[in-house]
Length: 182
Image 1 (tube, rainbow, N blue to C red):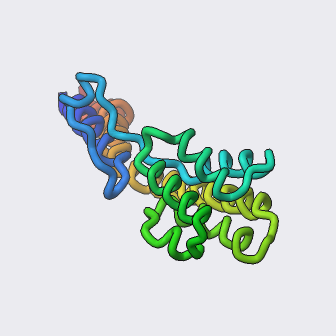
Image 2 (tube, one colour):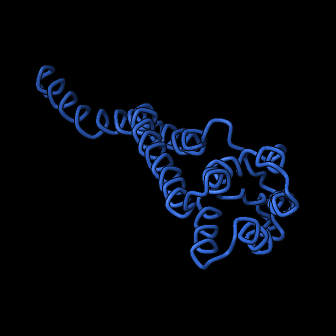
């Protein structure tokens, strides 16, 4: 009975242990209705799409306009479109990207040498996408390492009572029985 309560408590703690700090938690009502939180714009995917557009011969403003069209329902599409339009109209690089959200900063940083210095932007865009993925992989490995340390307490609460009840109790009861002469 006690082991079952400890197991139930440990299982109830698993979602708390697996939650990322600072991550928004979905409510039960939202999960029941099938609603999902809005997906965040993935900078690595944007960079991959931009690379394809640039490799096919599009100019930087044209590639930004095509990328804005491909991500139309996304909130960053308007910023991509306005940056491409500003560059076409002769704005400086900083003027075109001054109000860009944080998700577009790697994209702007990868494209800047191509726009200002005439460097081929495709390798820079590919490298920026690869560095984002590498950073995410490293963060996932660190989170997995932290998870091992966070699971010690629930596993100990589950296995220690079971070990005592199944391995130690029969040995102790047989020893007490032999001492009492039974």
